[in-house]
Length: 536
Image (cartoon, rainbow, N blue to C red):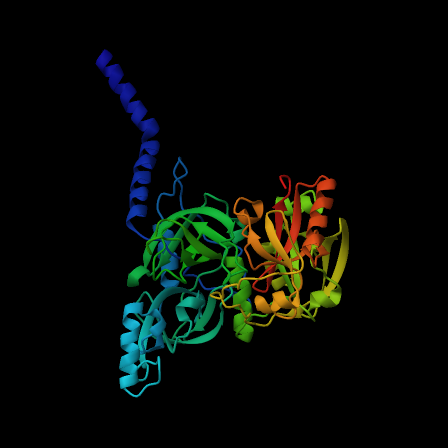
């Protein structure tokens, strides 16, 4: 009798928990598959609407999310992948590169330089010249990446770095069909490119989703072509949102960080949410070895959509331009300026004849809001200004000398410019006997006199106090200040002699400040540094 009762209890437990047990089994299988594959973009096989900006707005009734088990794990991504895969393509770009056979004498070890010089003279070359070599050869290079179709007529989005400099672009669909592609436009600042193919019938497409609804921990699925392996699918979660990776080449992008593996060939592929909508495009990875270690970065769909609209219409992207050099406000900078919170961006330099200059911006102004919306840091300010329309007036809230005020600016169109840089190998000469010198906050200082200007090869427009020495134990050294830098101002007051700096530091001491704000010029680039004065 007891055996029969135990049997009934066991069978009842199994029935009550059968779904839970199935969930645990499915979870184990999914985790194993993650380790075996690399992750890439997404796509949906349904066509988009006929609206002129059809690929920009997601459909009102998106595909349902995958069925879930009791423990919240997705049962399978198979239905999603089956829907989106037909619109994820391989992109191949041919590029012609010049390969020189000329040896670089500067990079040859010293013991061999004399040999090559003598050999060159024997061939009728001048002193120190290399022998005549054959002309550089042109060789063909091929890059491979991924892309996704956003319009049934053949519009495809991929990374700029996949097609940059390409002489020929080919697109291969998952069904094996191959087409020549035409480049519509590129935007290097966001690493987005738009290409087009002409097919004999409407193509499968994917649609953009809302990346702003993403949360850290959400599932993402990617489809792409790592190492040329087409239609590779991986999955993972969102690791971080709004990631600023400090890229000077992509200053307008707040990346989505994902832990799904991304490898070479995944570039340009879409990342999907569980509804099969594109929420990002894989662009780069962090890797000390060149392979995936689970830290990948995707360009948000919202950024891609804005860029694609301009690329299709104009072939390029127009951005707003203010004309200031800025940096984020640190807690030390905020304290030295008497600002309670380190929010906003401080103006390190104002470009002459720029919209900012015409509107009256000054060095040391702290920009805290644009058109009534608060600005968190310099990265956000850069993106927000880039999004302003040229020819329109924007309202900037700034803090100047402790008071908040509003400055209206007529925004101009940003033009691509290349900044000149100083020779990094130049050594500062030894300075003998200068009339005005001193020391403050761990710095050896000297006034910029004509003799100093000649000795240090400083331009005529350089004004301020030259730093000749930096105490390695000082806070200034910890903040990266180096000999050869120029102190332009202290506490937003222009300085011309070491005594000016000493007086400003003494005044900050008397006022009870723990730090003093320096405007420092390094090789022609100005930036603010808050230096601790509590121990000086």
